[in-house]
Amino acid sequence: MHAIREALAGFRRAPLLTGLSVAMIALSVFVLGLFGVAAHNIQIVLDQVEARVEVVAYLRDDASHAEIEALRANVAGLPHVRDVIHITRRQALELARIQLRDFEAVFTGLETNPFPASIEVTLHSGQRSAEAVHRVAAALGDYPVVEDVRYGQDWLDKVYLLRRVAAAASVVVGIAFAAVAALIIGAAIRLAVFARREEIRIMRLVGATNSFIRRPFLLEGLMAGAAGSLLALPATFIVFRLLSDAVVDLVWIPDLWIVTGIVIGSVFGMVASAVAVHRHLQEI
Image 1 (cartoon, one colour):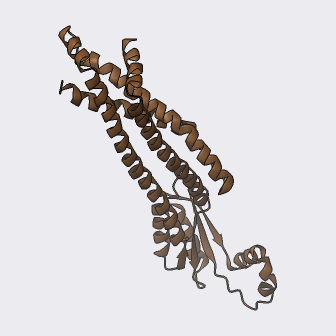
Image 2 (cartoon, rainbow, N blue to C red; image 1 turned 45 degrees about the vertical axis):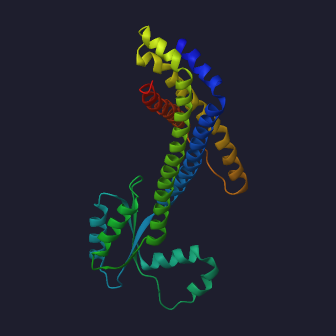
């Protein structure tokens, strides 16, 4: 109870610095929350894209049935491969007629079939990373009966690059705001320590340990971190709704991410207070 009373008193003694501490932690968590929303929705898009990822190997016209069956068997044994489908030239033409109905008249009047036979390879769910797709495509390209391999390399690489950039940006921006928040928390704790320096000296004279003296300051930092994190949550949700209604339909972040953000903000406030109070107690 003593630590709680002193922590609340610390809020009253330096309301401006405490408010700045809460605001900076809120801003840090808010920015991380926005990047979290972006990262979560990018991941959803990636999952949808990955569900449609397939590697198509176009076969040479002179490929024999035995060579194609051997190719299918070998590719089906690769670790990431879920299914291997052989599309004959006739099937390719029929698919083109179905999927490109505007050009049905063109396909109907053809004297020869211009479409090559192909092997369509789908990968297991959760194993459709760019590296896995590259390995399967490279393995297919090594077979003599394969004339060309396509899997949308350019757009696939760009999608995965976007995810890495978003993750790196969230970390860099979060660290920058966290550093500023730590400095402000340190200033608030320093002011509180010096405002109570006479009281701290008396407490030491009567036998109070540093851990007993430090406890209210740690609790004050924890409360500031929790308050900042909770303040960031509605702000993040408001921006999320505005973007979702005006720009593109977005999905809200999972509850586990929200709880994790609040815990991280609270622990960060406590750790920043611990570092500051440890240094300033040594000066008294």
